[in-house]
Image 1 (cartoon, one colour):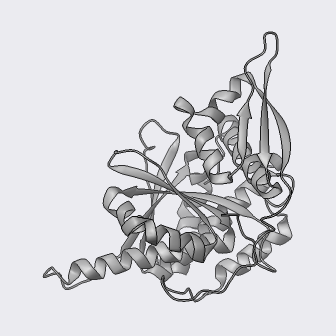
Image 2 (spheres, rainbow, N blue to C red):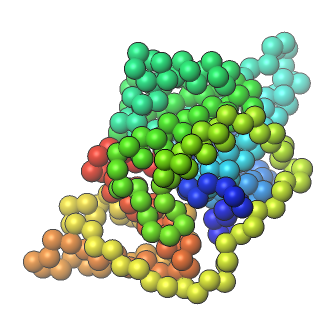
Length: 301
C-alpha cells in the first residue's frame, strides 16, 4: 500500500511507535489479520507490527499526519470496545480509561515535558488526557515510554499535540530531517497549519463505518533508483542487530534496499534504493531518521 496524502493536507510524514502487550496486539491484528487490514485501508497509514514471541511488541505507524490521527482513532476506539466487552463479564462499575504507550527518544522528552512541566501540563489540560513520561529508559534503549490514558477522543487530541511538539523540535534542530520529494519536514507555515489541525475537534469515524476516500499517489509511477553514501561507523545503526532495522525500513517503505560490501580504504558504504518515487522518498526518510537518531539522539518518534 502506497502512503497517501489528502488534498490540501500537510505534506508531512511521521513515524510513531507504540509499545503493546500481546493481548493488545491480538486485538489490533484481529481474526486472520482482518482488523489491521481494515485499519490500514481506512486510515491510509502504514501499520507494522514487530515479530517475535516476547510479551511486548512494537507497533509502528507511518503516514501523513491526517492518516496517523485516523489510525490512532481506530486503535483507541478498538481498545475502548475491548474494555466495554470485558466489563460485561465482570462486576466492575466504573469504566477504566483507554491507555496507549508511545515510544519516544529520551532526547525529545524534555521538549514534551517543558520548562517546569509547563508543556505536559498544558497538554493534559487542553485534551483531558493523562500523560506520563517514564523516568527511566526502556531496557537496552535510549527511549522512554510516554503513557497516555483517557477517552478515545482525549487520546486523539493528545497525540495531535505531541506530534506538534515533536515536529517543532525537529524543525528547530535544522535540516537533518529534510528529504527530497514528498516527505519533507514542514516549514514554519506548515507548523502553523499543524497547530490549527491539532486544535480542531475532528469527528473520527469508528472502525467499520465508511470513511472518506483519500486520493492516492500514483501507484503506477515509474520505478527509479537512488544512491546514498553512509559512513562506515554509522552503517550499523541502519542495518540493526541481525538486519532488523534495514528489514523494517524495507517493509515500511516498500523499496528494495541494497548495501554494498565494505571497500578497503573507503570510509563509506554505498546504499542503493530502488522502487517508485514514493517508496524511495519514504526509505530515504526512514534512513535519515535512523542516522539523526544515532548522531544527535533525535529520531523518528
